Length: 363
Image 1 (cartoon, rainbow, N blue to C red):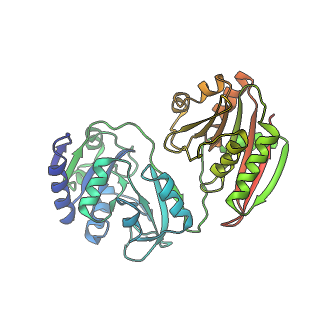
Image 2: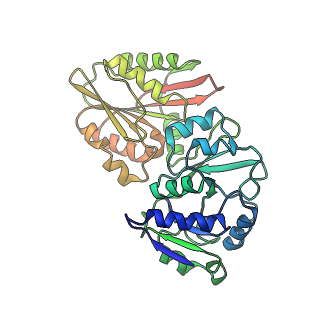
Image 3: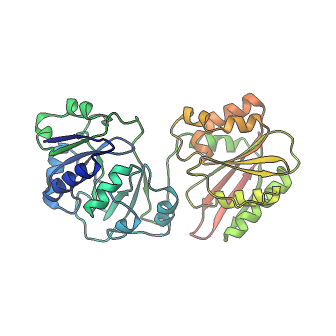
């Protein structure tokens, strides 16, 4: 068993050793942005069998794989419109995208339904490792079944039964990792998407207590933007003080397009883009600021407080928030404490082209 402590100067050596171990069917413990994972060659049946012995028990639960980019993913799974959207806007990152397998992979990295979960890790070393290896590696957590996710090599070794420990051929130690949650799993096999998010039920309950101001079905992005412009014209223009516009809907359902319409109506001249990676984009108009926020990458309430949303509300800005249902309870408490009105807008897929958009008034 080899244990390498990563430094700024030894990446080439570690990657060369890891590629050799993987090519020989060995097990490699490696770091990711969520926790330590365990890799084998995802195309090697004998290596996969060794991995299952290591995990001790898994039942029929499939194992996800990690790739270096969308190009590598497309060699192994069918990427439909929904998957393409996720790869374009949200990866690399802590997301596992489930797609239909093309048939060149075998269980346990293919489910009984013929699907495979794929990750593109947001971890530079791991991406380089996969690129050098040239094939997918497994992306399951390095813990054995029923043990906690490992955030350090020492913690992992402490929890491992001797039989499993003896199967590991190499540890890549990047110190103690941040205690981030495991990846979110998004199933795109039916070209639709359902994501369970914290706060979703509270958001839905709040809607039941709100007045429905408008309901419309749009079939083109331009129509969604036009509805956003109409909403801003009727409810946001000329406002004094802060207002929150809380948007809830699945990936690609029109939230950013609706925000573009709001910005245009208010007089924003800049091009409005998704704030997924920046968390908040700021757009000036008439000596004021429109703050466009996305909570997708925020992990907890502390992240929300550090994001800058409270400062924008204290400065009297209009704040449009995508994925607002993820932190609805926290946002609602902020608005109540500062006496800030909140509009709630839902986006729902009807077909691949059509969206149902409902606009609810402030409570």
